[in-house]
Image (tube, rainbow, N blue to C red; front, side, top):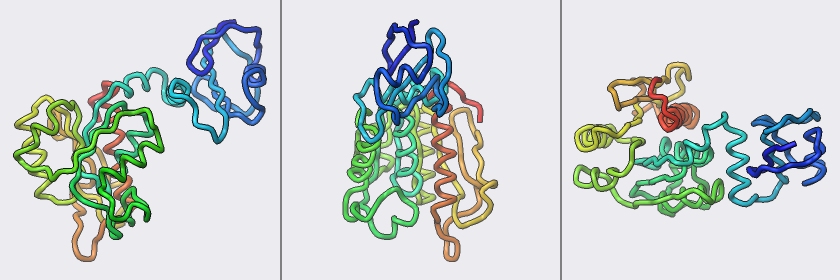
Length: 267
């Protein structure tokens, strides 16, 4: 019977999934059949996609990508791997979005920020005590390397303004706006709409405080402009930025980017 094991076509006399695992690995190895991790044995069929993953060991690139492809919905990973996404701002939104995009295997990420990690970032941003004082671009690139060392991560440690928007983002079909400052948000979005009218822009507005999670939504405001958030809850005295709602909004942005990468433009 011909099946696909860890990304390679193989022919053997196996009849069940457990027989494949016994011949290639150990009894406690993770066993994934057609994208679903199984605990009980099952009968194999021709062209089944099987992944046998040793616990606690970093697999080679082809095996890792085969596993990611198996864990995603069929044919999603191939499209995501070809994706190029720019993340502008690496604070509460951008740092979490970048990590999510790395976890799904986006092939090329551009990370742009000018700032360093400080203690006030630890309440909602994807940084740790060991990152204090580091450039956010360096700290995030370090994390992503630990998540998926096989994707391309480009960093630009620079403050984004009207003079460099085109230069920074002209080779990216999807740009994620993830600033904290409303004026900076407006500047970037307006310049992207003018300078890069064919690029998809995924931005955010309204995720402060601890209001209902259900108020955070994704909306399509223009053909190429998507806004995530509740559009109302701005950070101010008495209404700070907190991890749960910030990360929910970041999840909306990351998921919209994923949908765009696989060719779905509807919200």
